[in-house]
Length: 130
Length: 266
Image (cartoon, rainbow over all chains, first blue to last red; front, side):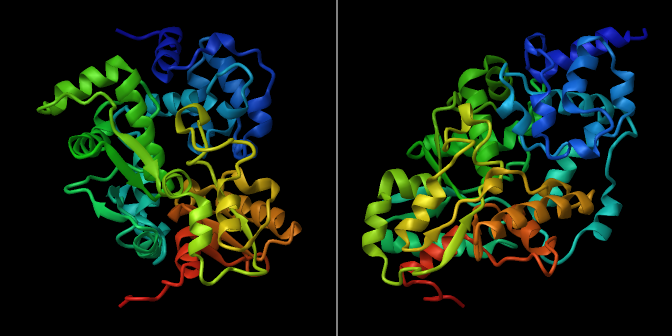
């Protein structure tokens, strides 16, 4: 059975644990986001797309891969919404599908140098892979 | 006083100084860090999704092990502290995570978030006291203009981390003052360094580092301190030659001021 896009959006929102209906689209999250300039869909717009049941556009965007997970968006939100949790939930909807991991173990050697802490490698796997 | 201590994956290898100097300083200040037996990697990133259970289990094991001892667990690495503290909050307040984690782990005593996760800085501030530390300083860091770089993991989300004011933190500046240094506050001290992008998007990390270092230099910062191995790496390796500032783990300066840096090292 094909899951509708709207049902998928509801699942992404539920899984994020954030109360998306509180969002008033003020854009403070986007103003605070240090990775926003790298994103094709800005944090406040991620919330808007999900409210409107749009998932495909988010899954195809670079935004889920550009979030730093610094939680500044949630810290600055006047309504207690966490765009970071929503973006992570969207990313999970991608990487939980077979063959959709964001990073391959074979790639790692080309990214690392002698000083790089293990923490960075562990974090990359946790963020981008299932 | 002996504290159970969670070193994490990086402090035994790439961030040995953070660990070593914390232990040396502890001896002077009257406490010992005792490594928790059989600790497992925290995973480095807190899994935010509500249905992520398996990725939280390794943290729960360490938290439950500490609960069976004296109920306190001291951390040093910002990321470990962040992950352990947030998973602990889930175990205390999220019945779904708690029930599923306990069902999976089949612990002798179900774990319900009883352990107190204490960052080493909190230990210094709340258990030892910065005033007591100041009394024990033998090499004051006189005339050194030091910027405290907080990063993300210790501060946010403030409701759970309860570490300091997330927008205007002062704990590291108070710490520096106790060591006799001149703390220099700068705008971007609580902004993200982009460390998690150090692997996949080095350009993004470099951009963040450049902004933070410019903000620090504008205020006259001559050296930086951090509690995070990834921030330390990123600020060091991804800084341009013209912007680079020396960056130390906060424990290194503590050991230096207490006169034990280099003592007993091999």
